[in-house]
Amino acid sequence: MPMFASCKAISDFLDDGQVVARVGESKLMMEELQKVIPNGISAEDSTILAHRYISSWALDHVYMEVAVSQLSEEERDVSQELETYRRSLLKYRYEQLFVNQRLDTLVSEEQVQEFYEKHSERFVLKQPVVKARFMSVPSDSPNLKKIQKKMSSDDPADVMEADSMAYLAAFKFMTWDDAWIDASTLAKEFGAEAPSVLSAIKRGWIERTDTNKVKSMAYVFDMTGAGNVAPLEYSVPFIKDMIISARKQVLLSTLEQDLMKDARESGKFEILR
Image (cartoon, rainbow, N blue to C red; front, side):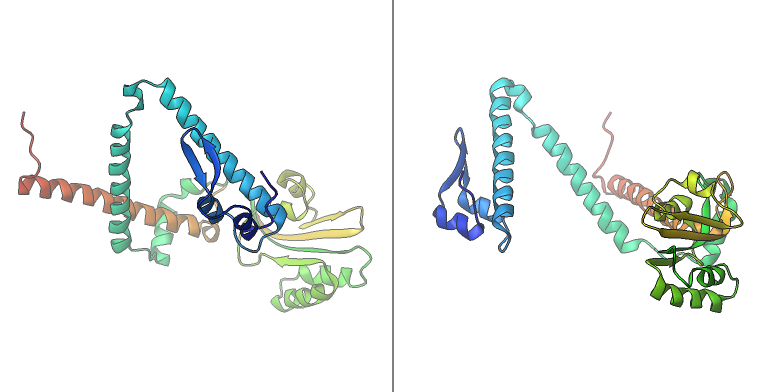
């Protein structure tokens, strides 16, 4: 196979309609190969894509030839499986259409609160969640102590000032003041696992300095441990998904009952024995 510079290069090498590869009586045409190679990509990428597609095409057809030769006529008959799949696919597509046209996706705060209170056992945490502020900064930064002090302040103005100061001094500054996050999300900022990071908390602070003298710090100002019920704020997205999913199941159940009722009443469906 020649090295292809681009889709155009392939076309220049082989005339449109020419056979590119063959497995038995099956042929891969130039037109089909051109469709999978975008214009404007490098010669190397064109070559890789061309060879990858040809190899995949050839393997499919080799498998097919072997299967046809080795399987019995009965084993080669997949009409029943295809019909079952067709019915399943059409059923799924109609259900999606039916649900999309009728599903109420609005969930009020009252509904969320009620669900949370009734099903609190569903929201027991498997790992801690935290509210925190994170910064990475050169360990010799002259503003380090000042930023650190304002990061741990309860005054929103101080936190905003810390953010502004960190913008100039820090490599990274992030706050999760209004959103609970998994402890593992915070741990990733340190390039470590959650247990080792959380065990390093001292008076709310986690501090680590790497070999490049970059200091990573987090101030954890709220935490709910594993085994406890998750805070409502953290649970809201999950609760909404559960409520909407339950509504969807009700719609589908109603659809099934209505379809069967209509089929019986119209005489389309009857049990003969």
